[in-house]
Image 1 (cartoon, rainbow, N blue to C red):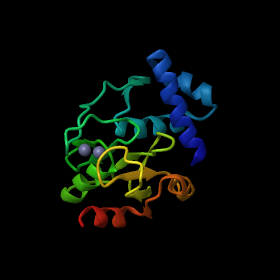
Image 2 (image 1 turned 90 degrees about the vertical axis):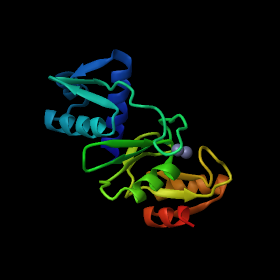
Image 3 (image 1 turned 90 degrees about the horizontal axis):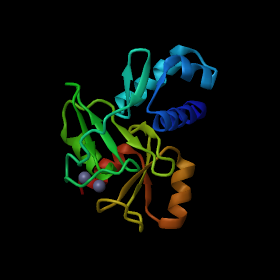
Image 4 (image 1 turned 45 degrees about the horizontal axis):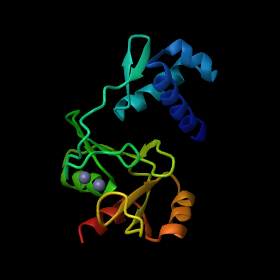
Length: 175
Ligand SMILES: [Zn+2]
Ligand SMILES: [Zn+2]
């Protein structure tokens, strides 16, 4: 799990540096099978970060950078992506708007969100949320996503708020 996350980060770094990379290059850079690289790239492509091309990948052309809920510009640090059965993706500025969109869409598939501490893309279902912290990064009440409970607790020590899972976070927003 951790190695996959590190790999994701490194792949993005490589693509940022050189614009694109071949599967072979990436396989060699990480010493893993091309299957693994393909899987990694599929995940990043689903999140709209990379675009797979024949034999390799490039950074995706930035998708609409406005929140589908409140029209605020989206920061990659807090982005929340709701994927619909139709294949459409709705991008939100933060978990606050993202969870609102998700709970209002009947055909939402598993959503993705950025880990606020590390910036990588995680599954929204498995994320740990901090509700109503003193530090407001985007929308109010603040909802931030974390990849692990430890990270969320670290953040909570400094900035307060309540730790919650996705159901609790949605309930909180509907109050
Ligand atoms: Zn928003
Ligand atoms: Zn927001």
